Image 1 (cartoon, rainbow over the protein chains, first blue to last red):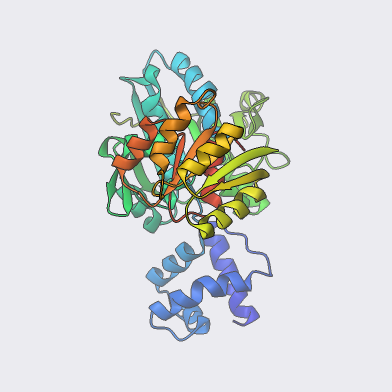
Image 2 (image 1 turned 135 degrees about the vertical axis):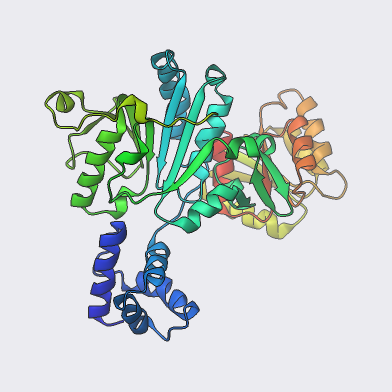
Length: 290
Length: 121
């Protein structure tokens, strides 16, 4: 791959997915895109770049999908899920008692382990019995969303982070694979969504999990995503970020919750100054039956 | 340092498990069947037991029952590690007092996740 071809692909990926590749990641691009080029009947990356330049949208989408990192597992990092069960859900049960509904968004949900981890905890949270709880899973990649919808995981995947009791309780064995039971799958709705674009159409949420995706973005892109997240979260809602992610030095739209690592709240001071746009009208919200 | 008893009739599996668990700061004791594992436990209970199911002399399921009936035998965290990968076996193991269950083949990530799950890491 020539330096010019690498620069072209870098720019394309930045524009389409926010992925901020440093100048020394040629090996990563080559290892992921050479197999894709061959599957598309192209000789090498030079031909792939030419194909993209000619306006072949399907190949371009495949390139963007191939370069996204979909590493995930059930109850990843554990701590944010402990917070969810021990403090976030109990607080929301009180705060939303009047409407008995919750909206939870998993941004960049990949193959579904995160939204389904939340769904299992919601299912086990007795105080939410009879509530309408919508868990929205979004990702840039249609391919991972399709896997997520199916809810089928390998033996290896169900052994990373998922307690064995939950495997027995919520999954059905299909040969060497394991499928989440229909009641858990029905708690999660899937949508294709690019975090770089406006996402006000999906409404506002009580909880947003946006974990391990911002690390791939540059500072400016992160700031933009945080601004949009600030418009998508209820004033008393919470945002969970990945263990290696923070708002510090990037935005004042959120501030960390004391003693709850990785959990952030909208900055009320900033909202009062008019920093954040108005919340979506309540009537815009779509809440599905649990 | 925490101790882990690795019970498996395969010396290769014991070696692989030892390497992974020593990397997680466990001191390892090995046994090649359930009866020898019980002898180890009578001398002193480990913090954790990584337990195969199918073994000669005494299998893992019978060993678990004997362990849980011993004085203090409810203390060690028992993680099955077996090729018996069906729900019926898993449910049976949990009912008998297993804390976690690894379906072979396994790797370091899986062992780490399971030992985190039982609170030993």
